[in-house]
Length: 146
Image (cartoon, rainbow, N blue to C red):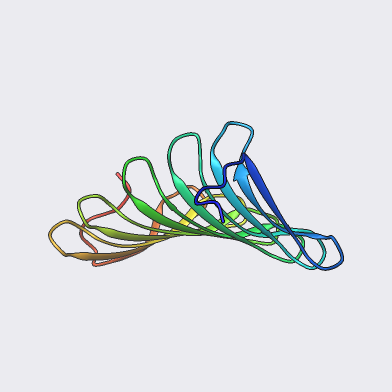
């Protein structure tokens, strides 16, 4: 057996010849692993993008992106959840200084809710109207939005 096998792309097929997985390089030479479902749609992918960010994506049966886990080039880990139309509806991250954040986004792409901890450990829950004005805040002092 050879100790090393080199190629730009490997394709895994089932007994009927259908592609089930692809491991290789994207058009911009970024490494990627793509897993396909029964209907041939991409169901999961793992890649390092052109900005050197590792991204793991899970898709619904139609191939629509529903969950994405990444580490941004800044080092910040993030998780995004998408609705059936591919719109971001929830985002979670932890800043490089350790503050956790969870944002809720409406169907129009507007931030409507925030739950986070500040550097001093103080928690904040804030609900926003369509103009990003606070309609609820606890505690009443402080604000996530300047």
